[in-house]
Length: 623
Image (cartoon, one colour):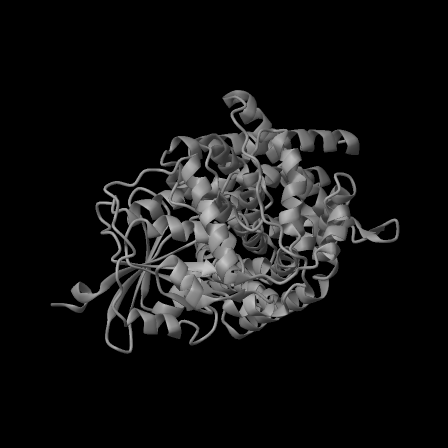
C-alpha cells in the first residue's frame, strides 16, 4: 500500500482570521499545493505531514466559515467538503477545528455544529499566547470534558507551536457522536439553543479579565461621530496623499540617479548594436521608469497597514456604511472595496463573502474604480511633470492635493456607478454591517515591516516579470522595421509601434492623445503601470541621438500640452482594466457577460471623461 493511500484525510476548519492557514503552513511546510475547487475560484490548499510516530496525514485547509449554514461561496465549499457532497473530494476522516483563543464566544458555535456530525475532532486553541497576555484563563481539561473531544493549545506563528497537536494526532481518536442521516440547515430555535450552549460552556471553562473600555469609548465618541468622524477620516486620507509626494522625493531621486548611472555605464561600455539598444532603450529605460515609484507605493501601504493594525479601519467601515447605503451598497462591500486600493483582483475575490448576489455583483463591477496602486506610477509621473512642486497656504503640497483629488474622484465615480446599477436592478434588501470593533492599539513595527517587504517583493516581481517582458516586446515593435536612410523623423515613427500608434491616434486625437500616448496605452492593458515604462521606452527611442538618460519628465512637459496631461489623468481614473482583472471577473461570475460589460463601460467612461476634460481645459487655456 502506498504512502498516499495510508494517509488519513485531515481537514483544518475554523472561522476567518483564526490562524488556520498559518497552522497549515506550520504543519506542512513546503509539502503543499494550491489549486481551485471545480467550477469556482476558491483556493483548495492541500499538504502532507508525518508525525514522529510515523502516522501520515493529508491535510486540507478549508476556507474560513462561521457556520455550516453557508452565506457565502467559501462557506458553501467548506460545508460541502465536510458533508462529502463534492464528487472529487472524499469527506475528511478527522477534523481539527482551529479557534481563536481570544474570541471563543464567536468560534464555539461552529465547533458545536460540526460536533453533531459525528466525525472525530480535535479543538486547537490557537493564539493562546495572546490570550494569556490579555489575562484570559481557559480551563482546557474542563473545556475538553464539556465538548467531549481533545483540546490542545497551539501558537501557529511560532516554531514548535503545533507540537501538542501533533502529539494528540498520534493517539487514537473516537467519533464525537452518531452522524445524522442527513444534515439540515438550522432553524431559529436551533441557533438559539446553540448560542445558549456556547454561553454555558464559556461560563464553566473561561475566565475573562475585567476590561477597562473607557479609553476606547472616549475615542469612539469622536472617531465615530457622524460629523467629526468623517472629518478625521478625510484628514487622515489627505495626510496620506500629502506624504506620498513629500516623503518619497529623496528615495525616488536616489533610484532615478542609480538607474541613469546604470544606463550610462552600459551605454558607454557596449558597442552601438541592437543589443545595446535593447538593454539601454528597452529594459533599463522602461523598467527603471516604473521602479522609481516604489517609494511612493510603499508609503501608501505604510499608512494602510498602520491604520489596519491600529484598529481604525473597522471604524472607518462603520462611518462609510451609511454613505454606501445611499447608493444601495451593503456595508459588507467596504472590505472588498478597501482591498481594491491595493489591487482590484483581491478586492473582487474578497466579494465572495457578500451573501447577496446583487450586492456582490455591484461590488465586483465598481471595484476597478477604486484607485489601485498600479495607477499611482502614472499619476505620479504626470503630476510631477505638469503640477508645480509648490505649497498651498504655505503647508500643503499642490501635487499631493491633486493626487488626493484623483483618489476622491475614483471613489465618487464608483458610488455613482453603484447608484446607477441600483436604479437598473432595483433596491433589493440591504444587509446590515456587523463588525467586531477591536481595541485601539499602537501598530506593531514588525508587522508593518513584514507587510511592506511583501508589497515591495510583489512590486519588484511584477517589474521583473510582466513589465520586463512587455518592455522587451515594446522595444522590438519600436525598433523594427528599421527607418529608411532618408528618414526625416525619429526612427520609431517607421516601426511597427509607430504604425500602430498612428492608427490609434485617429481614434484618440479628439481627447488630446498623440501617437506616443496611443502606443503606451496598448501594453497598459496588461498592467496599468506598464504605461509608464512604455512612455519611457517610446520617448527614449524617439529622442534625437542615442543618449538615453532620465529626462522623461522634461520630455513629457515639452511634448504634451496641459490639456493633454489633464485628459490622461481623467482617462486613468476610469481606465479599462488590465487583462488579469477581467479574467478574474470571468472566473468569479462564471460568465463572459460581466467582464465584457465592465471593459465596455470603463472604456466609455474613460473616453468621455478625457474628452470633456480636454475640451474644457482647451477652452480655459484659450486653445
